Image 1: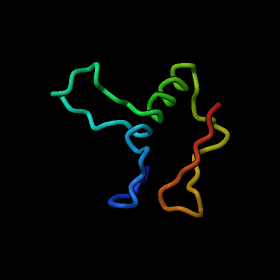
Image 2: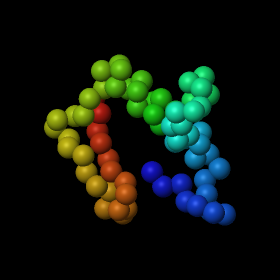
Image 3: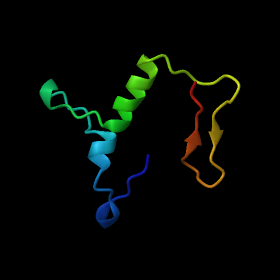
Length: 70
């Protein structure tokens, strides 16, 4: 993911991406971010890559990828 930097930084980057893991931070203060939480929930519920639709790069971006889940 790309959230920009400086004056163009995304104000929701910590909410979306979480905070860097810090061994000195108590576990109760860990912020995983909504993307990690949603991915964990999806995979825990049995979501897997669709073997009939392999991941594809977005032709309009060098960083985006589409992964179909079933």
